[in-house]
Image (tube, rainbow, N blue to C red; front, side):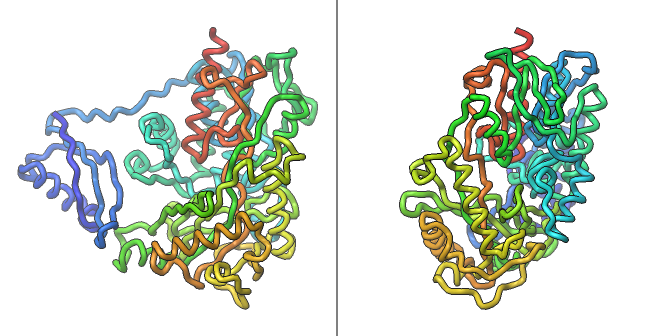
Length: 519
């Protein structure tokens, strides 16, 4: 009969299979030769008490007992002649919705404004090298969405991890390491994600689904109150009795399209701020208490939060061993974001540090109605472009100088490839954001000795943390509150935050579509 045990080991022992086996045997009070096979069910690093340990959850099976892996089963059949469902957006929500629709026996027709991932990689390289932005093919738009060129973090704040196992197994089936099934903070890495996206595409197409690239949606077609399809900007009509709207939080034109069609949307809270970058060695020293990282510990990360003047200031999308990238989607904007390769082996660590923005903070943008938050984002991004020297160069300031209100006469080396320009962010960031950031950084420096240093640099602006808009839907049917057959999904609809939660929400919407069409 399987037994579940918990081990606390040194990083070296946890990484050595023979030493791990001895630890399992010792925990069970038996000899090594009597231990059957085992699987790791959970792995996390604990460095809270001055020493670094790896906590492992282990399921040990008797020698002759078969391993019960608990893997969900995925059954795909030919849907080439099945009823079509339009899926707008090929990010995590859209792609996982498409896979789930195939399981239900429906044909997904995925409409993506950007390019397939190989062509998109060339556009991203051009953006970094020559600072040329393609508004439809960049770090936010294109096959795989913003998740394709990200750290590939797969953890979520939800405590219901079991709900997300399907998503993790699907990623493994398409090339992700099985480590993501048991790591407490799983990630894939920006170098591996494009290949996984290609395999997901191949699965969708091989079972009869379609993906239309370079295709903008011009309108949602209805017969008055019910979806009949979507019209594309080139005049094509995709006929479908249901549509999953999964366009991501940067597709601002989609929000305007919905308003123009009198399809209800609403403003929602979000967050904005800056991205801070430290040498990774500083973060390692702080988090591992001076213990050398060596070959057995990953690049250290952190998670920080502080209440300042009635608003939360917190770290967002922390990327150990990563890079800062230009994430704007329109000319004359500067938006910064972070990503990491699978090994997290760059010499920098970066994180968004952002301030909560509530609807009460947007009174001066009230004339924009439901798009007040979008306009506030746009204002700050244009301001960053102005202070960066236009283009995609980012305005930057040493961290202590930012906190103390001093100009940085020089800047440290930085991973942001398009380049940085010394700028007094403390002077031009809106007071409600800049003031809280400065107090937040002071608090973080008191909590993590060595964090507040001029070896770190602050870049502006981190503005695309989540959607400033929600597309309201019925919590039971997941359909839009005013349009039957329209299913808003993922980050852009205001119901997810990150790869896993977006993918899971896409699956939920596909389940709801199947119930709607089959009812």
